[in-house]
Image 1 (cartoon, rainbow, N blue to C red):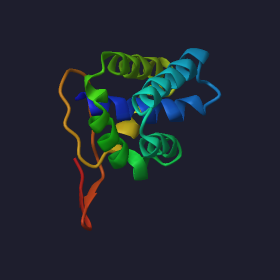
Image 2: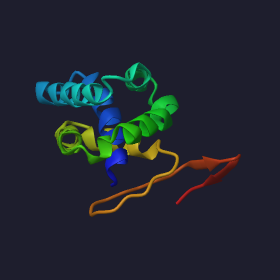
Image 3: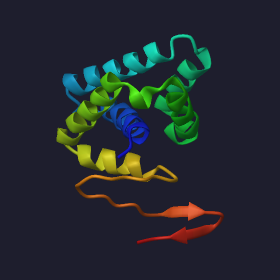
Image 4: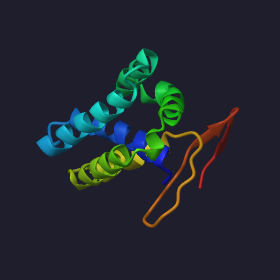
Length: 134
């Protein structure tokens, strides 16, 4: 998974997992840590900070704007952010129901390119009134 998609997936999965009673302190702390790193990256960009906050409650609407702001800020080249995002995804995956949270979050991305190993499933992609299912 390319770095921006990894960060977006981690933020989405972390936001969902953090609201669950089963989420451990480590997941919540890592999620807050990732957000803090990104906020620091967006330090001089109030609009980008707003997009990050709004993404937490409405990821479907704010995925594209956040992706753009992350790219503009160079978050995809920031080793600490990438490491925190990967760590968060790993922690969420270990939680009860965590893999479903990650799969759900990744499946809500309209266009995505991934590489690596593991399992992936994308379904119910709708484009201009058509539906394609695998």
